[in-house]
Length: 217
Ligand code: G3P
Image (cartoon, rainbow, N blue to C red; front, side, top):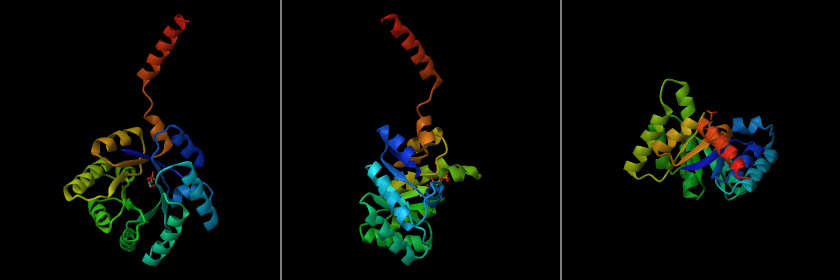
């Protein structure tokens, strides 16, 4: 399973990248706005800065909602850097645009996916990645990881090439569960990635080892 970081914060991206386990980055308009980025030039410059930090796919989301707007914006985003993946919402116009990007050799990430039916459509249109939002599903009354399992199962049976990118990760257990469920990619906040490191027995064991190591000095 590939690890992407789900943030537009350059410090956090750098920290995750320095761990040596980072495969890519996903952003969305909320995460970009959180960084105080304003205006087209600043947005473009920020994506460029992310692409210079990480050697892997960087999802940049379109703001438009019509086919023409999505295609025009996506082409501009894809021009920034070869690693840009155009993130497109799961709407009718978005599906048409994903097909257009597919036919024109531009990679896409279909976002805001909450059902297996939506995931089938995204794959049929030729999305490179499909992003089910598992945390937001858990916030309701269903199980987000179950949706990952379902989509992975369907893609395997049908032979779809689209990669299942588990998004809206809220904690380290989500990452473990997505790995079990066969997600191709998990995009996570830095806190969830770092949370994987923690175990009290590791801390206790290390304390003892360091104490005993001192005896041999
Ligand atoms: O990038 C999309 C997704 O990961 C958003 O997560 O926490 O806002 O539901 P969240």
